[in-house]
View 1 (tube, rainbow, N blue to C red):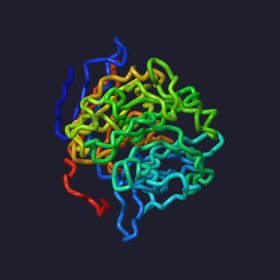
View 2: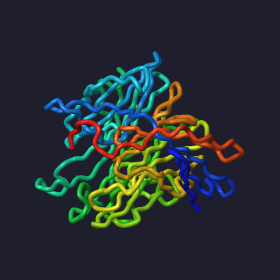
View 3: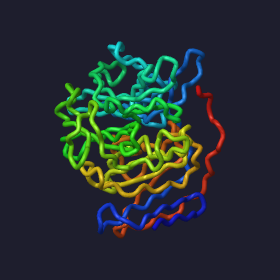
Length: 382
């Protein structure tokens, strides 16, 4: 059972259910907050690009925050915190570029103990359904940087869809298949990195949100080292392997009335001591955003341990790519505590406060601020 109610500008979402059979799910407090906008880069006409992917954040040892945004190519902004990021973001350089036609979107990062920065990108190779077709099928590649992400070395493709899994007669506006639109998070033992991916296979049974993993020790040589969850084990190759989906498509992605979760963003919440996943939900072939959803799981090694997705009470027209960035020192999009900023398409109008349900005091209603405006706020490239 789901209960939702509103007090002033404060939304509550409670779910009577459990992560495990005996554990009630958290309470979410969603507050209006002053706008925070992540910075896109400039296009050739001097306009700011819209943000078209998850936007990972990383700190360096000197207390500088770096945020990566993408629109076909990635950009980097920096500052003392998310409220003082440089504007506009600067383009980053990835070498070599020969094998990455179709753009690169940096969607996830990881800071190693030795200070090196690793990242993973979403790539959309052209011509898969003929040179005249706009259709593509995303894949995921790996990167490494020694200068906090201003320049990157391409380590190769680590995740893609099985051969023969394209549907070039699809009704989908963008994709004929592929694996992409993802996030990456480490487990609490720093043993594995978990890839939460969207899959657009021609067969509806392999469409939805799936999981893969790689040992952290393989960061510098990742090709062939990522394994997808399939049929009860981590036994399916990241390169061309099949998946068993965690959140299956409700209606085939390749139909005009498609209905599916996609674009997971996952962080470990230190207050809840659990992993939190935010999801988009598309309601047709054009990826119309039906809403933003949340799910919880204490153990990323259990792909079927996620709670049933529940919809957050925010307007559906605020864009794709829901994610959080934590407000505490050293917090990012991957590790955060009780209070975070909620972003969609790189803009945040909300603050989330997570509350446990194990006798934690319920929150007091905040002073009402405002409902976010529905119109466009800044010049963006569409």
